Image 1 (cartoon, rainbow, N blue to C red):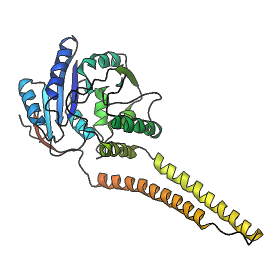
Image 2 (image 1 turned 135 degrees about the horizontal axis):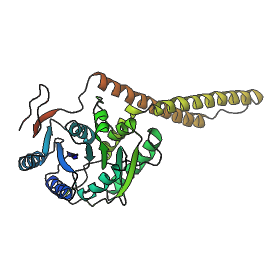
Image 3 (image 1 turned 135 degrees about the vertical axis):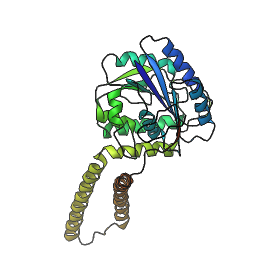
Image 4 (image 1 turned 120 degrees about the vertical axis):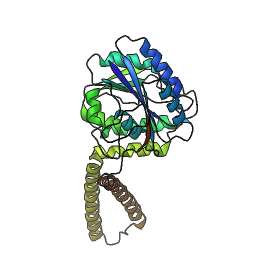
Length: 316
């Protein structure tokens, strides 16, 4: 059975070769599986593409995709999945923290009949900032997304071909891969895997990238809009009741002075909430415009070891 390993690559010239080498060694131990790699260079600023070219020259089962600009991790994965031909697809990072030695565990678990398997790290070895932002995102996404109870998601996963076939049908610009998984099936499992320390460099994820990824989930939920309606109704009702109370008190005791400081504080809070809700609505409108304008998920500049499809020309 062919297993496609899809890896988005960014500034990983010193690690991607080792990832491929170790993964090949793991599959040599497995009798019923063989592997292919789809490596996507997401406009790295180092020699990542040259490293991918060298790997594709050395290994016929290594496919390379070079994107014309930086589209982001999930868009790069979508580009890789579009070229994956395996009955099973494994997604992992390029930095050795998602270690190839863990792949057999995913294959064993998915053989139990699951459609998707997510790896859950025993101990996260990210930076403090990424751990904090990750915890906040997981908490919020837990309540925003339609996903099976108690299922955790990560960047280390395995899915069946039919899931891949359904996911690549999505043509919107803003991609949140795990949400597309949840939209396809709830037959999902978790396994506990080791999270290895980063051997080279530092994480490319920062607060801005994390926020952008989190905001992309707005493509798949209307809960924030419903929250805006709910809070708008609550605060409008509170303001109306408060106005009646103030009027009655003033009629009963004309000497009572209206508190301007408290009024200003209340106005600041309410205006802040209004602008927050307007911002959420603006995000939805902006994403709608991007989709209407057919903003591409990714643009391929060149490829390696990929057969041409339809009228496309592959670079070999």
